[in-house]
Image 1: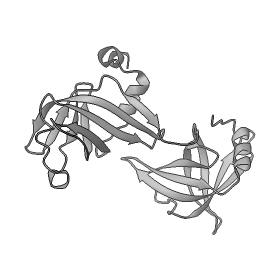
Image 2: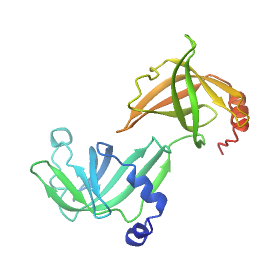
Image 3: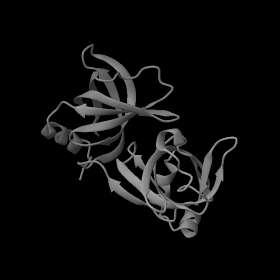
Length: 227
């Protein structure tokens, strides 16, 4: 990590956020020509260490001709949402170093020298890896074991191994069973609101049905803070 900092001027935390871009991540490209600035959508393909980044050339049938704004030595601004980790918009500037048309239409760019971030979430969340048993609130049956990745007074995000055969369903009412330091059970009720996944993990967003006071008390017992 120290080599990365010396080479590209990024902190370890900056580099971690960049490394969280996975192949297939949707990204926003800000491109410019002589008379306009345009934002288009495409996807991240990969990176070669800190040498370069690779992105897919945007679909011109959808966004119109881009040949006058995407070419070698042109600057691009890349934005993406780091929602699975911290709920941030990450943005950085790179320069196009090469464009390939075969076998795939790809853009190679420099590695960013710095990044900017903006928090999307209106409320603070505590980062954690608390183990939880997820229970079907209606049938009172265990669904699976999972990890709470972050939590606030209104909701949380859990992760489950992608290979797990048992998962919650969208809109399903669930009970989350925590254990405090003394081994006592702590319960929260919620509804499954959304899901996302990467190569190895499925993430679910849960909205709590408990009051904020009840959630706050549980967080105190677990020694978690959200501000």
